Image (cartoon, rainbow, N blue to C red):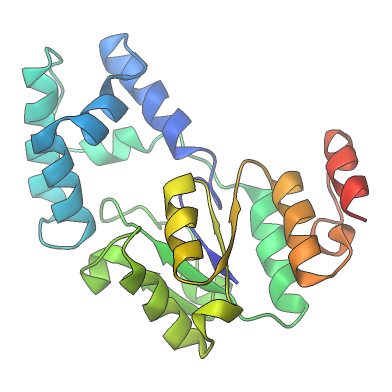
Length: 220
């Protein structure tokens, strides 16, 4: 089992960046628009996520991109402020723990952003293996990052299941031969995963809140 980090084990990265964007510019879409559509901002992100551009240099470069878009921001601590709206998703962490308890090996496949993006999480305790873009020099959706995780878990790619909140990352995993789940919320992911693993969904998410009941019941 392979898990993404931001947006899977945390609340939505897209929503978090949108909240930050609105707070500094009044435009919820500006930050994501720059990171996905501005050539310089996209280059900075790729270079940083693949470990060729350090934390401070990314902050300086992206602050300049924001200024060019008419938003004056303080450079120091920019990444932390971008991520300040993210919170742990306790249900998904519980699901991950349940997957391990059922005997499945669990790996992290994550594009890293900033020096502190995993602060407060014991990755060695949560995962059997890790493949983090900034340490490996390659980022999703490149097939190599998925392959590294599978190699470290000792499984073939066609034996693995990838959970990610971005559809393009799941598409890449499926092209490699994996099965994939596009994550939206813990109950829906537990329901989909229960089918793939042939287990009762409530073994994965036993303390699901009342609103999650329909998705879990459908998967039983």
